[in-house]
Image (cartoon, rainbow, N blue to C red; front, side, top):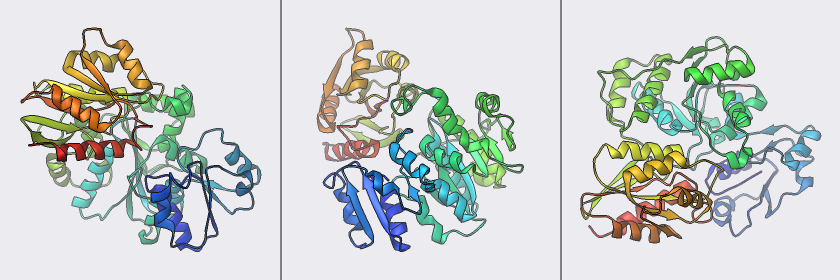
Length: 427
């Protein structure tokens, strides 16, 4: 249920088709919209496609339903399957149940990708041969199953939707990291922060004695207030060692690194190895990624900034460089609040180029009349307007602080288009 375009649904379909399953793939998107995904699956004769709709009868007579992460909480199709007694699974939690692997799971509103990859690189540097899965672009965790043996180390980035599968299965990773908790996805959760917290809490609720949970004191306290004492050893005082060097910029990344260090230590990775990774790990694509300089202007790709807090962190981090900033931001809304972000935009940026959308309307309503901004319908227009507004010595920062559905397929597409515009720009 839910093929999508990111690659995870495709990989899940490939996994089951290669295993010989009698498979139905259903998605609300049309055949035309899903053309790139369908092209990858055309070699399989054991897949039936029901696209542009879901059919109630497809959720009967099956041995299992595998659902995509963003299926609505009140889906009548999932409810129907459960009434028939059909197991409903999700790919990361199903992998965790079947693989026998030692699972390290990382969640959080912000920072989870950075922490995930830091731990992965630390384990790799220690010779542990880890595997990477979960909320990774183009990757289906189930496809790791044939090559994973019991006891292997698997590191999973887990969003709140994927953790619904862990809650339903009443399992948690052996080592869990929850970086922080801020408003996000309120369009999906209909403004219910408690439900969002509940989904996230599955990262630690079902851990056992001998497991480890790295988080903040506030998150631990809130979980235990809602669900009772945690069985794992909790680490809530992770701090970045003062004498260590770090390649990543920003105070938020020092906190991310501190939690990654704490998690790596629970895996008995030597400090010398951990320290070397922290010193050289320069970050991920789309997360305050430096693309380079052209015309004396420095370009940063922070396309994975999908919340006001993420945009706020980017602006505060780059403010330390002392260069004027032209910001590309805005887009569609997840029912979030933009007051603090907009205040920082006014303090830090010389001009903003805003993608059209409901989030941008909120931002526009908060900007003082004297602040210069323009709107743009797509990346090429936004890039062109930002370039016209920037002078040598400035920064052009793409940090939307929002999603941009209707303009881009997802945040990765948004970053790819920005990178492409940078590549075409005159030196």
